[in-house]
Image 1 (cartoon, rainbow, N blue to C red):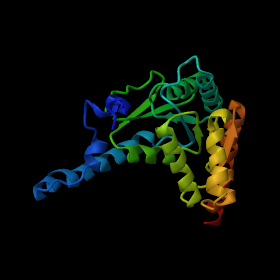
Image 2 (image 1 turned 90 degrees about the vertical axis):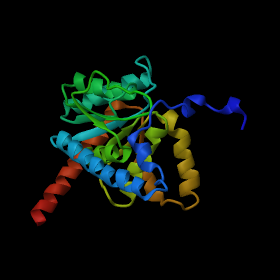
Image 3 (image 1 turned 180 degrees about the vertical axis):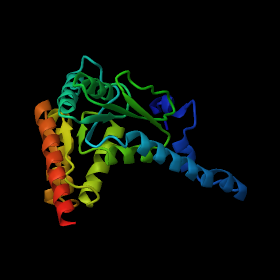
Length: 251
């Protein structure tokens, strides 16, 4: 491979994260496994316990995802802040990955609306500090633990323009909805121009070739309006609450 085509910043990592250690293949020596992976299970368990304990008071939450590279002068930053403000005023806790960009905008909007601002930070090879608008900060070593918290303590996902991590969270939620693990859980794509190409591909390729059902397209809401995004979350929460009351009455 032409070395000019390689991003050396991705090769020269300053630290080895716990996620990476977990995903490494076991060493040849039998003792290496007994010294590392079984004990790592204890650390994973403790991380789940810490997350559940820290977020146990979040009964009405929404997670907002998007790029950490979005600056305060970007219209999407302002839109994320406004969306979070509207939801915070309606009693929603705002959850993010705690970092800069869209995450900062959403946590900032939560503060604007007098709501609870939550940040779930992740250990990365490069340092990522929490933005200054977080009320409750939880630090995670493992992506899959953090992703569980986002799903468990959210009633909806709002997905602003972002990169691989944003897409990861988007399709994680869609998979859980499609397979019936969660329900009445809106996934809102904010920024019609940004997401249009992906939606066209999902429609023409995935649905067009029968890889997903036509009804699966209804799992996504595309919007450019903070009020529309917020109202979709509010309506879904009302439906979830009504369904829960109905189940309690039947029980």
